[in-house]
Image 1 (cartoon, rainbow, N blue to C red):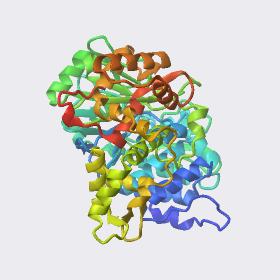
Image 2 (tube, helix red, strand yellow; image 1 turned 180 degrees about the vertical axis):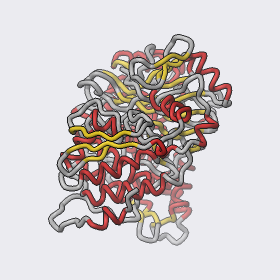
Image 3 (cartoon, rainbow, N blue to C red; image 1 turned 45 degrees about the vertical axis):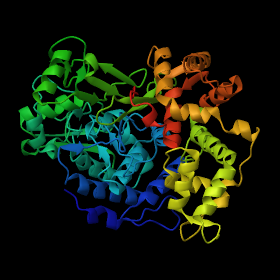
Length: 563
């Protein structure tokens, strides 16, 4: 075991270094700093890489083998699958779903590295986010969080290329860092999240107790060995360190390994794959873990009183796949994994008592075009604009309410009173305090200049039309629109064509007697087709308006949250 002082304190960051400089203890500002730097193709200095790894390992060592996560209606958790060094996919996830925070927790289910060109950047973003939000960002070990796998699939070469002086130190630090990653997450005491899967002998009670840090590498057999390999070797199966001359020296000791039965348990959850055939049989495709059938899934879930397994480990054309009667979900977050357009990426949002909700995406030139600092999507900006139109259409009533609350005629109100007026007059139960920064000017004392509610609003149509039937429709009938959409979206891809979208609105208008002008339908269709591919990601659009408008659930007590 190497001390932080042996590495970090001996490395100076020169004045000529133009990349991001991290300040420990880290804050959310450091996450922003790192994201912007990586967007500009900057490389994080080796000193900071090592310090982040050491600090992360220190926290990981305090964590159990399985992290427990609880959700609530106001705090869903997002589970992401394999990223494999694909930085643009991570950017797109944060762009669509928001940055990690105390109110926006994530589980990243392993395989952060290898194959892609930006594995160290992906790993650094996840580790820094974990250090800032250790209770709300969770990291599971995948089968590629293994220094032997890194030799075969690219991460070792990436490190040695980007860090020619200190690359060896980073690789040596990663070797132990991997072993302290938790091996799974349990959500709401009913959903098991592991990278690979299970086997017929999976024993969660045993897995809770194993010394996970003794699992150095799946590819390293538990026997004493000493050999010497060149860095180009693709078939070495031993403990590896890298010499200053690029040679790999390998050694292993029996005492450093888990007992055979415990080792096999960990291999199964990191390497296994579900199959439609009943039973449990060797995973010949991978050479590790097993193939497990629906009967094995039911057996293990029943034994440990669980309802579902969420796993990753396999690329799926649509980014996710549901099998074993809805009891096993595969989530894979690296789009274009094999080649451009080969597959979508996806993540899943979970909340106790509701069905999983899947969100798909695909990195394209269009998705990479927007600067990352746009924290809200185009659709959310559009929703804010419509909301402002709604405000100016009720300007007289709002001013009357503001003046009534402003007894001193100062032109200012506390945020709480401004929010009360907005909710009362507009009849929309929104998070007005959170929205205030987008809608009004607030002084240093936290008071709202309430007349600024009506500034910088350009009305393209008469005020009467600006009352916006579209806003009312999205607020009041969101669940009904979602039901109709899911009926049209027969392949459950989350995407429908422009013509299907228009047909959906016609069907809605007919059944609910709500008239939406064709020009408005065309306008929102254009807004939603971000990459101009002729398909509409309706789930994302509704999610954006849900954040801004919060449809009135009291109007629709029977509404079902469909996934």
